[in-house]
Amino acid sequence: MLEISNIYKTFNKGTIDEKILFSDFNLKIENGEFVGVIGSNGSGKTTMLNIISGDMPIDGGSVTLDGKCLDGMKNFKRAAKIGRVFQNPSMGTCPSMTIWENMSIADNKAKSFGLSFGLNRQRKDFYRSQLELLGMGLENRLQTLAGSLSGGQRQALALIMATMTRPDLLLLDEHTAALDPKSSDTVMMLTEKIVHEKKITTLMVTHNLRYAVEYGTRAVMMHDGGIIMDVTGEEKKNKSINDYLKVFNEISIECGN
Image (cartoon, rainbow, N blue to C red; front, side, top):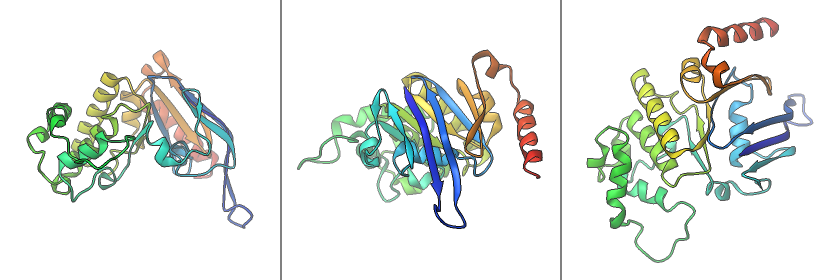
């Protein structure tokens, strides 16, 4: 279970540009939940992911994962338990390395390195079996450079790499935003398939309301550093895109837009 408790975060503290984003922010995610997070720009979605991953310090509060406090833990140590796929497809893979080499690095995540070959030939069949889940034919292209793949293929590969060692938590940071509509839909279908089959607790930030409606077990809407909507179960199933848009429009009117 992920628990974000009493988080405080201020940007540009002590300057005329001081901005309090989080003030006693709380969120709890149960094991196995697939939570879609939506909200306007500046609502705190990506900042929340950066706090969880350790890429951004907090002014107060705590983050715990399965009862273990992550406060003060460096992000590279958190990475042993947390997988992340970024918006930019190039951030999840190394373009100058082959698919095989990329997957070997991901396979060795959180393991100690000694004076041995980085490429494990005995794991090739396993890598192929993982790539077969994508349905893109990449299982037959292990020697292909990742940089020569399309954006959708690279993002799908990044998704496999992030989940190959089954992390305790998967963070998806608008991982379809840079893709064309067809590739976005493909990656989303793969995302749900992998998350469901591997039973990975997942937190997905997205600007695509349709994805928030159609995918996942829970939807959270953020605004100005707070949660203004949190639906799950039958309530989520019964909500349409128009229900979310109505709340967005109400926020815009309140903000004078």
